[in-house]
Amino acid sequence: MHQHSHDHGHSHGHGHSHQHADPANIAQGAFIAGIALNGAYVIVQVIAGFMTNSVALLSDAGHNLGDVASLALSLFAFRLAKVKPTQSFTYGYKKTTILAALTNAVVLLLTIGMLAYESITRLWHPEPVKGGMVAWVAGLGIVINSVSALLFFRSKDHDVNTKGAYLHLLTDALVSLGVVISGIIVYYTNWYILDAIVSLVVLIVILFGTWSLLKDSLRLSLDAVPPNVNTEKISELIKHVQGVENVHHMHIWAMSTTETALTAHIVLNKELPFDEKMKVVHKIKHELLHHDIQHATIELESAEVPCHDEEC
Image (tube, rainbow, N blue to C red):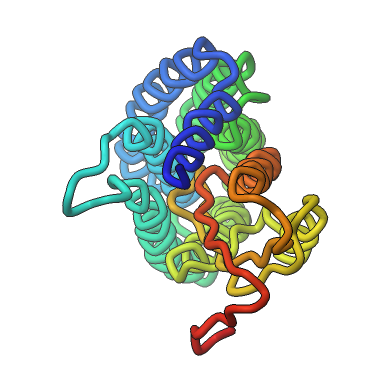
């Protein structure tokens, strides 16, 4: 009976997170197209960066590589959410989305370090940069980032990963615009130090994004409460369900970048018959679904029989 209520809540949760099957598929198509477009552009930028001797282009390539990684991660999350759990992996492979985000952040930080070293060296010893070609390649970046952002426009309000991708790509178009302006100025003035300055500005922009990615993914790896969930609010929510006397031993953690789990011990009114108690559990799970907690496991206790757990 208890198990049945859990499963019912689970299927209901999928109804909530994908109210329309269509946007999820549109989003998946957008992710694949975005990865292909941006992946090809990163290769163009790296080759052009070495040919033109521009650290600004190489830094922007690092930026775009980060985007390709985060787009791939989101696509990965869509796919992994559908993998059935096994006897050994009873949660499926959902947590890999968090580990991939963590890896992505660490790799980006190393890239930032290497490019920052090169840019700072160039501040003291500016080297000739082919500004014209830099401007053309970065101009292509504005087009590619804008087209990629438009791919996500239709489905950006249906999923947090999609909205993140949309905003990220719009920011990128602005970064490319900065590199275009720098390339044009360098072309006409031979003021080569500007390339290194723009590179450092781009790296600072990436650092802010990467730092929050590192912080969030590290927190989620350590089973912290996801940022969109307020523990006190959830505790109050459970206590306000009719029939609940108290709640304790509550744990909330992220199963993946998109799914949250909760376990809790609740003390119910001892006058309630068994069927009513099951209805209370069902009501709690339903309320939790509306607060982005898809997987809840509730343990029932009565006030007379104390909990023997050390933490109670």
